[in-house]
Length: 491
Image 1 (cartoon, rainbow, N blue to C red):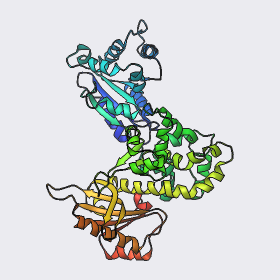
Image 2: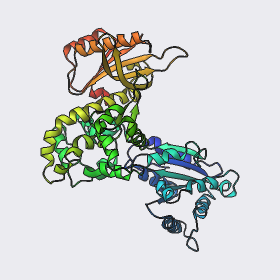
Image 3: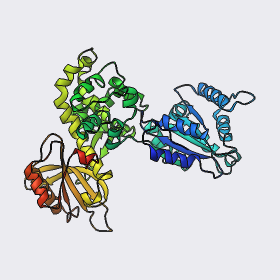
Image 4: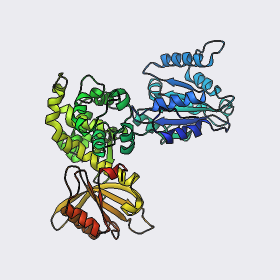
């Protein structure tokens, strides 16, 4: 299967689909593909079907009877039988889909599968029965059936626990957003500072450039403000209402007031359950369910504190949601009025830096340490990278650690703390930042939770480093200074 020239990256996903679809072994197989909306899943699967001569069906919100008629019509057009297909139920439809692979491996894609399952909750059980071991329709087929969906809460449960399809799938493929390095390449932005600012708004979702911004990318750093005004803050572009539409399309988010308010609380800097409850003027127990639903939907991410048990913090996982709730939602009425975007943005730039860009920069630093950094630079291969608060009993204060790189534990020994780091987007870092990290390392050593024998100190800065910081790094092998070009692999 040759990957289309117009498909950006997705080499891992294409290879996984190729191996699954072209597998010559007898017997029909089932795969599940899912990911957030606008990531290119439909393009990916439709291209795979075209490359392998398969069948693609895109479901819509419809009654069960209408969906059966639609898939019957689509199969009739694809197969060209002597008489058109008219299915009485999904058992008949699935058996015809399995018959497509009677002579060779054939991909069969059912896109937006949650729509079909919502209209007919028995559908997963029907597919389970169709793929039962030793069933003739399965053993004589080499159909490679792929169920795809964007409703993460539903798709995540499809293969879990006691779900009917548990143990039936031979492929579970998650189509993720592009990371910050790939996103910069996709948006054709070479300046790392500009790339990070754009990434803090639109993240790594491919559709936001090609379809939603119609290919409009900032020409350079001086064009960033104008780009924000003419794209994401422009009521005439799809990006303007995208965050609202994404929230409305999540099937499990039925309370149109509470869930956006929880996201707004996080966007305003309330990262703990207690902070969110205080912002909403509710008890922490009252918002436990909304938080869990937002987690399942992939909108909120729960991060464990690297230094304190049972003290998790939450962050918005989709940058556009964070930008919308921090910048757009509070002044939505003004933004809807034509010509107000430039005025609103001028008044919002400071809030953008503190509430959107700063936290996003910290998260990019953590992801870089986990997925991109040379293990020699951070002191070894990370098992996980997080953040947290280190308590200072003498001063009775807590010190925030933006980046905590934790290594692989060796048997019963304490896990090694490979590195700790501080991330500042606007500030030029100096000797005081290095001394602060040294003090925090001493506190962690006294606490005894981690092995800090070789813990390195990482200074991440978008504003550069002064001479004292550079001198400290030159004089000590355990200090590393990391700027945006390093984060983007340009050094």
